[in-house]
Length: 159
Image (tube, rainbow, N blue to C red; front, side, top):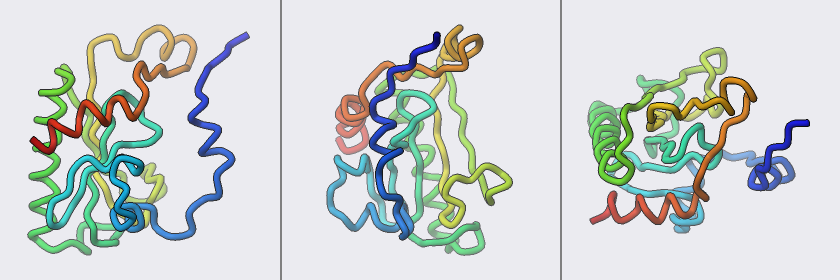
């Protein structure tokens, strides 16, 4: 019998799902730690993925509500990439990953979980992070509580 202990998932499973755009709502709530927002710039912000693929899985999100690049100004597009680069630098300093997966899923058929609001995923990678648990057991282990990860990253993003 396979047993996976993931108590944080129950909160998501039982919670009432947001009717409004999550990426539009969270920055205005002024609860950055509770909402896992690590960094803010003029046009974009960095938020941790609450259900990460790996420790330190981040998303860079424009404040503008748009599902495509066409909905962003040239300034916002430039800032989106600059903050993505800054985020990888911060993750390198905090966790010393050996690589990154960085991607944008545009549209439901491309895998976008929140297709109405474009965002960039940054997933730090280490040799062996797809261990036997992932390969044989089809189970991913996240070794650290998400708020512990937040507390390590926040001072790196905001020196």
